[in-house]
Image (cartoon, rainbow, N blue to C red; front, side, top):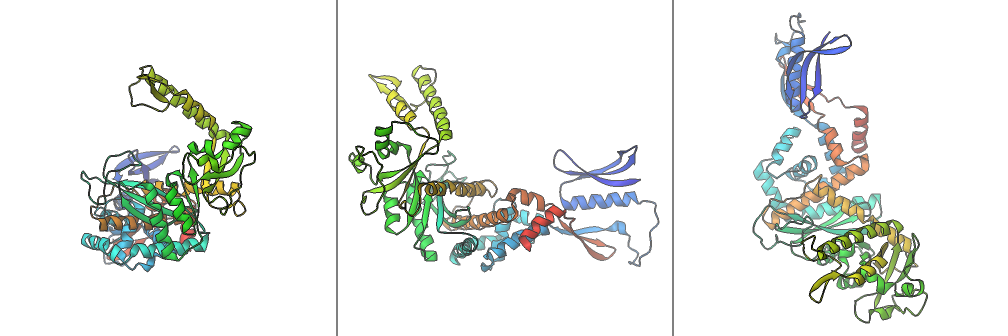
Length: 515
């Protein structure tokens, strides 16, 4: 029996062949071609069916004398994928933005991140009639003038509040670079997360404890990370009328002015502490217990708000018991929680050994590099800084956290657990940079750059929502749904629509979003 079969090639195309079953194996009779799109595949499959039925009589169905062999593909659409993204758009309340071109740009960003102009191709391949390029350009201008970001942020806040707890938010920053040679008022060369020297912008992102985006902000490329946090948090507070909030951030946000400003605003915070603060914070412990710690040990103590020579006086090492932080008593200190992990100690020790070996190699002249850690100059010669190395080894396994939340309100274990949720915001940044390809940015005006970030913000929210609802990554979801195409065919003067054959497990994923 002759049949048409499809075979996936190494290049990713689909080969269409006429074959027959002989001796329990398929024997290829004719190779009809390879398809790279659903339209090409439909044509090759129709060609195969026509060849397979050559010479057979046709039953007159009264369709005007036109043969079924003249079927023509008129259109195709990845309807399942479009429906899923549109359902997420509505569920999140983003339909408050009544701009079809804006939705199309977000859809293209979720499906196949590319430039604004190339989004036309992506939409056409999806089977969506794209807006004109000029309309997309006008949409970027409307984005700021009509407050699209504010509307999307309000919808995100409403969604996050309906499904979880937004009393604790996570904050972090990243950098996005440009394919540009010259700086301007916004795009500037600064510290790059990707170690690049291109002009860039600094982007701050505030998310809930699950990583769902709540607020985004854009700053000059050379702006210090510590100066980005307060503007975004204040904008978030003002937008939603919030007063009681816990902000979690990494040690990069640890500045005396930041913490004082947060505390003055009535906000609570948990930030990572630098390990170099441990000798001061843990002075009593080191005096009474040495550098001995047990796995999982917590030490609840205090840390000076401002590092000065007299900083050690806030924690009297002559007293064996660690002081319990009281905001009324310790008005020059914050609460500090230190935790010891044996697993972290192993990792830290390994890193220190590598740094020690590198330092020794430089001193011995085996490597020529800029002065590494633990190398100092004595009498004009490079020598190993054994005192610094010994201090560093004494602190392996320790991780510190600074907060203004009293122990009676939040125990040490909860402070640590809250801080460790920061990986959610890091995951959102990774998603924006990989799955949604926020970088590089090809816009050059602040208006267009801000609009690009608004599109990214909406796309990130949709991607996080779809991942949470379906339990699969956005990349896998798009990869699964995009090939499922509804095809419109003209046959003998009639237009027929062939629905995609959706496997049961895929249909279950779709129904989680659309029902």
